[in-house]
Amino acid sequence: MSAFLVIWLIWELFWTHDQFWAFLVGAALVYSFYTFFYAFPKEEPNNGQQSEPPRPPEGDSGSGT
Image (cartoon, rainbow, N blue to C red):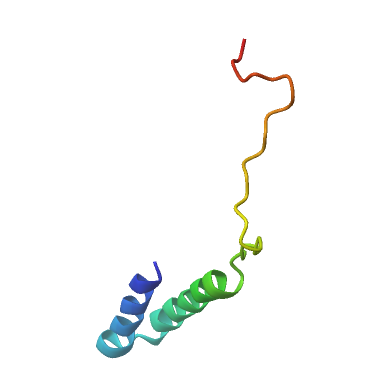
């Protein structure tokens, strides 16, 4: 998505010279970079341990009957 916005912004700035669309595409590009690189949830480090999937409750064989 971001690569498409970069190409579109270059197109608007150097080919069409349309300031309105260049501003809109630039704003969308800034927003996409912000959400991906800054606001995207980071994973918590688990000190080198692999996390285990949750275990079923005791007495549940998982057969579904």
